[in-house]
Image (cartoon, rainbow, N blue to C red; front, side, top):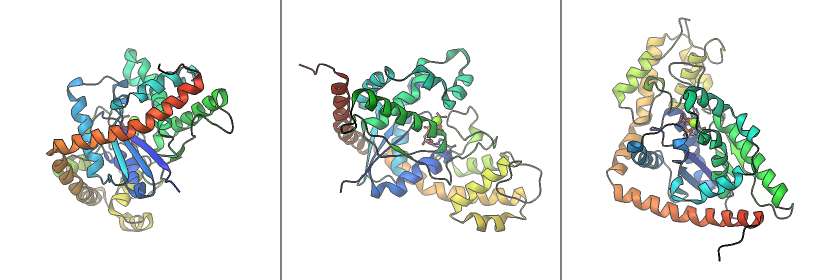
Length: 336
Ligand code: ATP
Ligand code: MG
């Protein structure tokens, strides 16, 4: 039987942080051998907020190289750049015309990101979830491994697919495949180092709020030393009054590979000073091999180019077929 297909992506809006790694990429790596995987660098999404044209191409390379450095294996997975496959933009337009505006106005991420943009909110930011739906639906993806923050967008993707199928398909011959989210509980929502109630984000203006996968050891140590804590003695999980404490213990649990129970006992009587040293140490150890591999890949640009070229070809072959299927269902005159 053919393997089920997986699709996911990260925006080149900066370099990857621990939230992206623990919420998404680590899971991609773990499941990849069981699926036929497509991992894209979603550069069209990256311009939904103001972006820097001078760094976009470099950031795109960085994310692709980090996929490889984190363990994405080309034996199982295809890596490509979203803007290299024009079907993403084209399907977005078709889906735009069948997506009710009020579905998009309800999206939490839009509301949160729009507040930060003030007067400058683009139509693209509102349309972000439709582009994401196109990304997923083009590949007939069965599974979409993402962090918790993308759950609402995945529900919207399913709603859009259902609407297309109802309007233009039949029960026997649906136009689009309905994808299922794959959200792992542990690490699905890593919080900011400066505020335990908001998620760690590439777009947070403060670099001190996140640990980037490429931060050198001294910086990791500094960020952890300065991160927000509380004056309560002893460290405990799951106390709603202590979101920072829960987040840091969760990070330590996942990064050390210990169980929650083990960490609860180990850290029960610890002070912040002692715990922060421990967390910094394990974080640095997890990041070291990723950083070494990353440097190796970035030093070999021809290799990276060849991967992205091949990735585009493979992705295009799948995406163009789906696009054609949708255009046929909508009644378009095929190119003559
Ligand atoms: P931006 O702030 O620009 O939106 P981001 O940090 O949210 O950046 P994305 O590129 O939007 O990163 O998301 C890439 C993947 O990482 C998605 O699967 C998303 O769900 C996941 N992710 C993002 N932030 C976190 C987080 N704090 N914890 C767990 N997963 C996360
Ligand atoms: Mg995001």
